[in-house]
Image: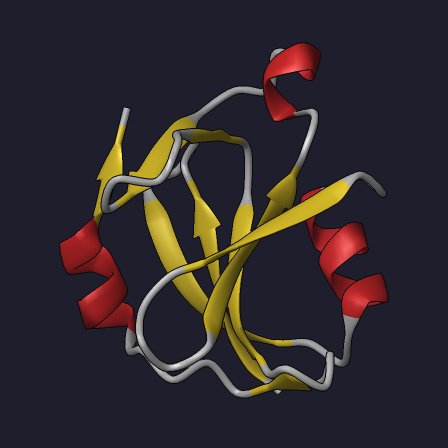
Length: 100
């Protein structure tokens, strides 16, 4: 399914294809994954829950969510705990994202 990868070290957003949580863990690089809703279409930001404890490089913030350190992935996630394509576009995400 379609997802958006945020890479704060390169200050980029890239459309990627993932098949589930194992891909998210692999791309982010850790098993301690947390998520927060971002938007009105059941899109969620997935990130390393321990990102600040690890001292990961590069930080970003979406809207008023707490800042995240390291990579993040935005993907659709519904109430039945099933992943789906991300609803927001790269441009919409870029307008709501700031690098710190």
